[in-house]
Image 1 (cartoon, rainbow, N blue to C red):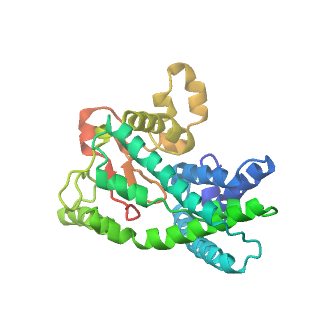
Image 2: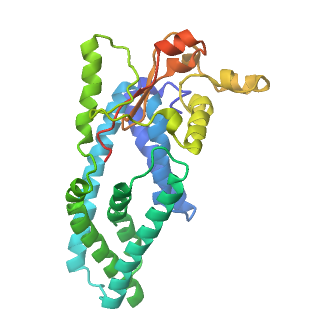
Image 3: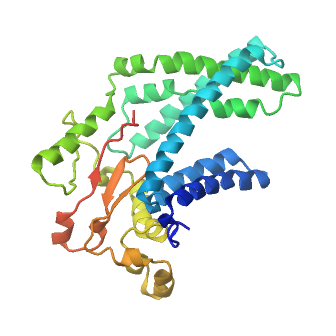
Length: 324
C-alpha cells in the first residue's frame, strides 16, 4: 500500500493507516486464536525496516514521535498497575515455596540461555562475546509486562492465583533491584556506557571537512575499531544480502531493483513489482533508514558495480543512542 499507491501525498491519512494496519495485525491474530502480542511484535519489526522507508517525511516524524509517546505512557501505566495490583488485587495467593522456586528457575533458565549459547557463538564469531558482557546479559534478565499480562488473564483457581502472585513479585523485584543496579553493574564490569555521546564525533567530523557526502566510519569515539560488515556471522551476512537484493526492492523503493537481481526469466514479474520511482533513482543519493535511525545506507551503492562508483559512495554506519 505504501509503495504502489500515492497515499504519501496525504501524510495525515498515511499516519492513520500506519497505526490502524498495525492494530489490525493484533485483531486478526486474536480472531484466529493466535498470540496477538507476538503478531504485533513481528509487525513492528517489519514496519520499522520496510514500511518506514516508504513514508513521507511528515509521516515519519509524526509516527515516530507518536509511538515514542505511546510507548512512554504505556510503559509507565503498566508498571504502575503492576505495583498497585500487588496490594489491591483480591485474588493473591502467597506460596513461599513456589515463589522461591520461581526465582530460582528464572535465574537458572537465564544462565542456561546466556552462557552455553554465548560459548557456541564464540566458536565462530569475531569479535567474541567477552565474559563481562555475558555476566551483564545474565543479570539483565528482567521480567515485565508481558509475563504479568499472561498471568492475570485467568485467576479462577488457587494455582493460577499463586502464579499471578509469584509473577508479580518476580516482576517488581527484578525491575527495582536488577534494573536499579544496572548502571553500577555496567561500571563494575567496565562496559562502555553513554553511547549517545559517540554519535557526535561522526557528525562533527563530517561537518569539519565541509563535505556533505556520507562516509564510512568504522571506529567509535574511543578509537576502538568497530566490527566491519565482513566480520558479521555467516547467517547475518546471508540474510543481509538477501534483504538488500530481494526484500527491500520488493517492499520499498530501494535499489538495486528486482529487474537487476532476479533472473531474466522473471523480468515480467520484476517489472510489475518495480515502481517508476525506483527506476528513476539512477544518479541520486537516496538515504534509507530504519525507524530507530541506527543505520543509514546510500542506495546508490547498489546502482552500479564499477569500482569508480563504489568508491565514491559508501555505506554510513552510525551508533544508535538507544544501544547499551
